[in-house]
Each structure stands twice: as C-alpha cells, then as structure tokens.
Length: 158
Image (cartoon, rainbow, N blue to C red; front, side, top):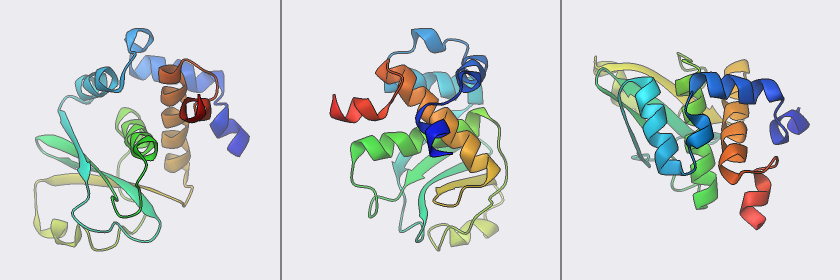
C-alpha cells in the first residue's frame, strides 16, 4: 500500500485532472489553493488549530455555510513540508467531496455541536480508512505534480 502512495497510479492523476481541470498550468501552492477554492465554491482558510487535535490527528477540514477551514496541529507538525502535505491531503477530501467525520479529534473543536453553521468536519490521521487513502493519494499526486517529479519525496531532498 505504501508503494501505491509513493507512486500513485495513473488513475489518480487522471482523477485529479478531472477534479482540477486547470492542473497542467498550476505550478505553485498559491495557484493550487485558488483552484481548489474555485472548485469548492467557497473560500478556504489555512491556519494552526486552536489547540491540540488529539494523539493521531494532524489536520482537519471544517466546512461552514460560508467557507472552509483547514487546521494543522502546530504542536505536532513543525515542518513546512509536512504542513503543505496536510493541506494537500485536506484538498483531497474537499475535491473528492468526502463528508462526515470518521475519527475522534480530541477537544480542539468540542464546542462545534452547538454551532449550527458547521456543516461537516473531516480529519487527517494515522488511521487509514477508505476516505483517508483516497485523500492521501490525491495529496501525493498533487505534490508530485508540483514537484514535476514522479516521487514527491524528492522535493524535500532535491
């Protein structure tokens, strides 16, 4: 399974191009962010989480009626490359139109049940559900495209 994530099948590239038709011309993270916002139909704000996301959660996508937020656990994630990957993973959830929260996210967003404007919340964690695998494959494919290499890990070392 790890091999499939490091070298995503061509079908994931095809799928990503369907989800982001302008993908071939996107060459930077800001361009990708704008394209994902356009495909999503609302603004996406990326920021550190207000507090810990829990033991195995590193990122969260939260959607309200008017916009989406991507949070990363600043206490656990110190590398900008890892933050970028978390954001790309959440882009995967957004583009694939995943819904619902499959995992517990600690106490960072415990008051959300009272807030009627929150429509959905999804997390990036170490537990590999089907939705997590799909979002991860999209993230790796997106990173490979931006690095213009078949292996996005090379971007970190090259």
